[in-house]
Image (cartoon, rainbow, N blue to C red; front, side, top):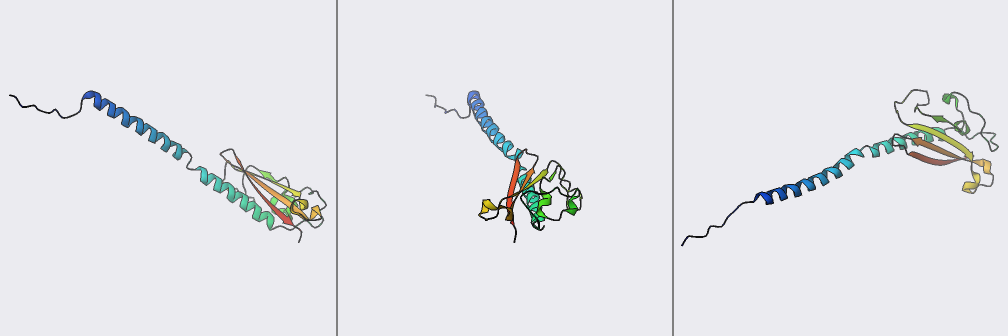
Length: 155
């Protein structure tokens, strides 16, 4: 009698099936990884937009409430460095972000616009002209816009 020998190893079909399964898993992992990497800069862009909006809000908050505000903001000075009160920022808009002195900050792709309106009734103040609602909108390279709002009261 001849002893039975047990065969060991893989057949060609089993090897091809294993390669296909591993390839499909690898492609799935790489597509998820590629999606994450392509959006890895998004938080930085949103943080930069927030920093721009915060900077403008601080600049505006440091200005005086207009002494003779009667519901509508007058035309502002031509140069931002001459802005003296909160109302001067009404309808301010720029596609190049600059500091107060007019120096370009090198933030290509970002834009800012400001709106200032009477809003005393929004925060339960009897005279609507005793509070201003300041809205800063920052556009950024992702196409969205970040909107930040604050109130400035006459005190």
